[in-house]
Picture 1 (tube, chains in turn cyan, orange):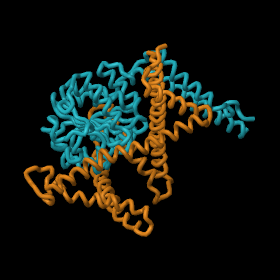
Picture 2 (cartoon, each protein chain N blue to C red):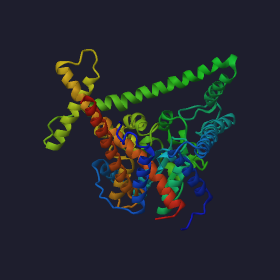
Picture 3 (tube, rainbow over the protein chains, first blue to last red):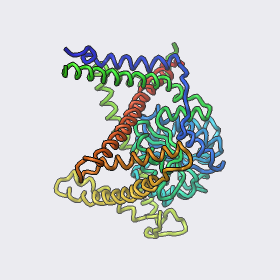
Picture 4 (spheres, rainbow over the protein chains, first blue to last red):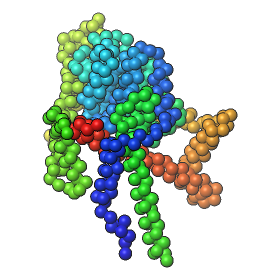
Length: 273
Length: 227
């Protein structure tokens, strides 16, 4: 006779998971959060660039990655704007330009930064790696107009921007292809530009080799990475608020894995007997 | 309870609930939200690509080229090209793009192969050089590290990395039967791979749970305005 857990309707698991995520959002537990070296590396690399530099930030994601990547985009923009850095933003995901523009403008407004002077959102461009290569010949060649439709070459911020050599730092926030991997392959490796990345958790293991080899100076992995970054910056954003729920859900998944293995192990033992 | 009055928030919240309803069972509300998403996405992407790629990168520069103008104002003439200022030559990718649509007209459909050949050739080239520089050379370089660094923790890290790298590579060496020393090394490699898969699975769980958290945060904070 099968164990009752084998016959368990999976909707009960969905319900428990839903409650374990919902309750900590309503009643925060304030579980401790430790900052990992890769997140500290991200923060320190941004901190090290000269104040007032112009930084390239590629936000390659769409609304599916909002909970993980928007918090880290916001924190990175705050850190850059606090250093009076100018930020050139691009997006290589067709589902992302509107979202990215909203995020950039909201943080710019919060810090009192001016469009076209302190930051520019160049918007979306189709072409994936080809766009990265064309940007190497001139950023304005790939993006003749910004997201607002303004002539890129006429913007004050672009007066000092020619190609990748104009940037002391590349910040890649990505949810997959095209994203951090392609920026490493096409830009970091060729132009030896200092680079940090923020990525979705599901893709994070792919980027650890780049961290090990020094191609990436820092890495934010998923919501946990975003929450750690917020902690380093003494901010309390949506990633920090979501980490209690994240921890509870992980404990439950670990419990389900152990329970499932226990059922299978005891079943096999019975069959052998 | 103070419900948000923004119509877009209400639409997003109701569509989120429609999608969540699939967790109970497949139903017409879920199907409606799914189909709406596919239709809206397709329309959005077509319009976006038209206004952000075709118009600024091809149409406007071509228009200027026919007037003899380009990026470099000092040079005039439709054929006064230089790096980054391609003027009339932008018609070539334009024509190749149009040729892709010949697939819709049976007899001349073969013309689209020229465009595909260019696309495949360019991307194969870009990918190959990118992989060689960014992954192959840099990763081999990054793996050649001293085993003893003077610090016990970093030395241990280097040893684990080297053992994991060598044994994992040996696992994929199929020219000899995995017996004896090779068998033992490849078995150790399997353990390293398992740890890697486990870490990948853990991160995947984190990613998926984050999506749920994001949606619940939206429903609670933006829609219901709790917290």
